[in-house]
Amino acid sequence: MARADQAAMASGVSGAALMDNAGRAVAREIVRCWSRRPVLVACGPGNNGGDGYVVARYLANWGWPVTVAALNGAKPKGQTDAAYHAALWAQPVVSLSANLLEIVRKGLVVDALFGAGLARPLSGEAEVFIHALNESKIPVCAVDLPSGVSGDDGSALGIAPKAQLTVTFFRKKPGHVVFPGRALCGPTVVAQIGVSEAVLSDLNVQTAENHPAVWGGLYPWPQELGHKYSRGHALVVGGERMTGAARLTARAAARVGAGLVTVAAPRPVWSVYATALESVMVEAFSGTDTLDSVLADTRKNAVAIGPGLGVSEATRRQTLQLLSKQRACVLDADAISSFSNQSRQLFSALSENCVLTPHEGEFARIFNLSGSKLERARTAARLSGAVVLLKGPDTVVAHPDGRAVVNTNAPPDLATGGTGDVLTGIIVGLLAQAMPPFEAASAAC
Image: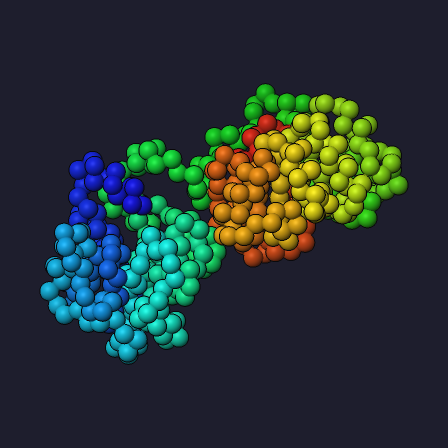
């Protein structure tokens, strides 16, 4: 956001004007969401605090009872935009204290202590105040981000308030969409404050909220002259024991539009698949670790392996055999877990045509990584050379080149067995239709 502000100022918009626009936008959202009531605006020493002084000024001008509290009771000094707007606040500024919460017990707290630039946990009176605020259950409106939440990755650096509303500016940041930041923000409103859309092209933005704008231009929409041979052929490798997983994957691939779908089934359970799948072809293969016969047809241009296959040496060999064919593929579940403690062997066989779809447990088996979810997914994609879709309520899709999207539309109902198999099927169905792996994985979410 700082770079966006700088670009806006370079185009002739002053920093003071941007701050005024930001504070006014927050004040308007407060008026829209709450009835008139006592408000405590907690201001920090930087630009976030400067926004807070603007919020206080507008609310007071509109007849709201406002108290402004600052760390050590001190306004910002110097020639900064925050100091300029603090000087426009003509009423007293009191020292931030948990005792002040008594005057807004039935009111509202505006958190303008620290914004997205904070890189350390809250301490001192700010930490004590936020702890008391959380205990009080008083509604909170956060300016930009709740204090203590990292704008870069959504992690809580220490204690942070739980906001009922967050108002941010120009664009959401990763901290608004990745947990726990997303939960701490509550509903997030994005206000436009005078930063031009053209700024985005100069910022080389690498992280986005998942949206059709990311992948819609590459989606394989049905064509009037299309036919089953022009829409790709998806292959799903099935297992012997948990046949339902591969069947769900195959149905999803067909449903998303793959022209043809085949399940490669071990010969002993071939009939189980054949009797359960009407529009999907079933091809039997013999042996426990060979896919030569089903991979011989190069028209099978996208392959999913892992759902219901079982964690075993045979699964590992089948996966390596598939990867040697250099086709677009999705590795899920057991195809990932079978490489526990052998991740280097897997990584050496992967390519950017591949998508890995682990949940957190499967991810930990092949990636020994720490840090935020966004950071771990990005690092995993770079290390493996494949697109990584790290599943969860805030699924992250990461490309080896550093691009990443965060999914924000997953309902809790998806936390049930089989949904991951369906996700794998959607991805392989889109890959079969020549959608690029990163966009296919993003669209499937």
